[in-house]
Amino acid sequence: MDRFFCGKCGFTQTGTQIGEVQVHCPKCGDLLRYQKNISPSGDVPVPGVDPEPGGENRYPLKFTGQANEFFRIWIVNLFLTVITGGIYAAWAKVRTRRYLYASTRLAGHSFDYAASPAAILKGNLILGIGLACYFFARSYKPELMGAIFLLGYIVLPFLIYKSLRFFARNSIYRNIRFRFAGSLKESYKTYFLFPLLIPLTLGVVFPFWGYLKKKFFFGHLGYRTSDVDFEAKPGVFYKYYVLASILMIILVATAIFFFMFVLTGSAIFTREVGGAVDSPPKLFFYIGLLMNALFLLSASAVQQFVYAKLNNYCFNHSRLGQVRFESGIKADELIWIRLTNIVAIVLSAGLLIPWAKIRRTRYILSNIAILTPGNLEEFVSEDEVDVGALGEAATDFFDLEISL
Image (tube, rainbow, N blue to C red; front, side, top):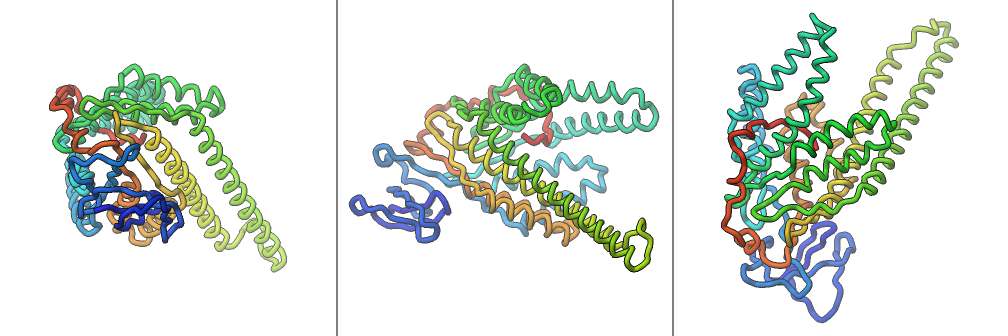
């Protein structure tokens, strides 16, 4: 079976290419791509059949997770975490990731997460001890606060390095583990040295630091004997960070102007009716709360804009051997999902958190695909060496939720 598909909106239809006629997508008007020898399921090319000369097979990620299924996992995790004083959080994290991984399919095969909850618990306990020392020093020994902050800052790159190795080694596709080959030295360069330069350069190196973090993550991932070739450039990071900064300045200036306009109007109104000028009505207090909420929503929207643009750029400029990645996340759609998710979570007192997570995860993954000149089956089975077995399981026992 052959098909046409739209790389922009995801529209798909079956058919046969006739001559050199270009077919446009009926939904968005973009040119449709033509792909031969697709299995009836629509996502896996027929094994053993090569693509057209110069063409590529496209394998989109599919996410099959359901909000009602994930809600049952989430509510049990939340209950057990609370009654165990946070100890169950390690098991909750593993259950959550295993469900999300198992619900993510590529070429008909799902991913797996093989981490040990006991290993994660060790990392959580270390973080817990660090937080306990911080609160103890703040309450009883304030003079120790500086030393605790310094110690935490020194240890952080080590924890990030360990967590990335642990995370990659326990991420599995078709019984083969991923791996992370970044060095501890580069972790300290990325997470220790460059943050010190941010205040010294008045924030000028902040976009470059964002580039280094992505490079440290993408550029050291590996699968079997292939390593990711990260071809992104820091200039694009500056472009989107500068644009995000301009948007935030506009939003903050607009919020301040509107708030000052409301306060001025309040003072004039109060003086005209003979009230106390320094006692504005409660209405304006609520307006202030509303303005803060709108500001936070605006900041979240800008953050999603940067995430969508840089996520697409990093994936589209990464290569794993002969395999390319394709990401087509639309910033406006991701912003809409984030803002409506926040509103839904607030109005439901948190009960719609599982629905929001599934909704966002499904959108992001459905816009990521793998492109390969041959069959993915050939790439996966080209070498029988399980590279994941080379990981140092005895030393990689940290798993920290650190956003990269």
